[in-house]
Image (cartoon, rainbow, N blue to C red; front, side, top):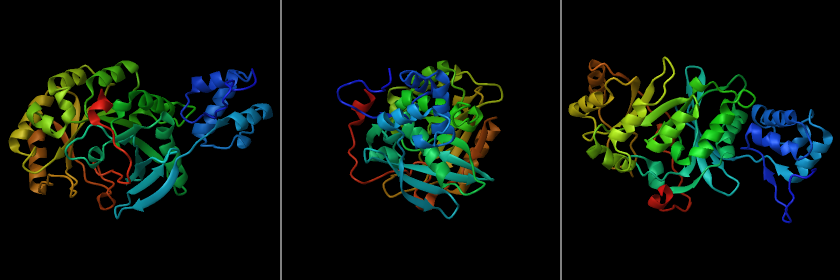
Length: 363
């Protein structure tokens, strides 16, 4: 079979986002051996190539077929902003006109890429501008991976992206299949070859998907956006808690298979008078007791649309000390890119992208 497309209506096959196995199956349709699929995989992901004519170790006939019937799409960089602290925020355009934001954070000689997983977010956390934007659509696996490829093209000589965090726009486990597929490509030694210890997936606590991730064997760091230690408060701040309350969430996390010397990270955004009181710290310590974990304390990144305030440094330090006194490893994470709205909870696009009903998106 020499053609990739046999239907009466000819369509172009988008290759970016296909796994190694899918590319091997695709080249087999052209009568080529499986190793040609591996070569194609390396050209697309390891080398970031978008032109079949440049894939010189592929047979000319295969390249001609790919030119006619396949494509390698790419995000379009629409805007770039640079913070006073060196953080860079990129606005990328998708093929359908949707837009996402991706952040590149410099830290001690290494760059961390903060990747988006959805256009908007359906989970509506009370202190997050992305949640206020609403949910538009999931990103495809190729669009997730392509953020890394697009950022690589923006790097200066000598720079490299050392860490990946899935903490941008959207909830990774709400877009589970695309997230896992993208991570498989990002980790694959023939793809982008990121070490698992350099990749972190953040979730607000979708319990069934946490269990699926635990069973998948995908060995990446897990971070949980907690923000409250009681159901009463977490119901207000993180509405998905009403579906998966703390008892269910903590049971899933205690059963999560952690490699040796790894910890689950808990993200805790501190809001003045809401969840930063001494009793909140004591409740948090009780909730996490006995779990191999660390807590990242994030003083709230304020914005006019967010109805909470950032606590004083004194209150933040006192909260951290209370956790440490209870034997909980806790760090204070400083805001990065606040002046360009690139900090945690501040990614949002207001350009008329249509939001969908949150309940329907999670049904």
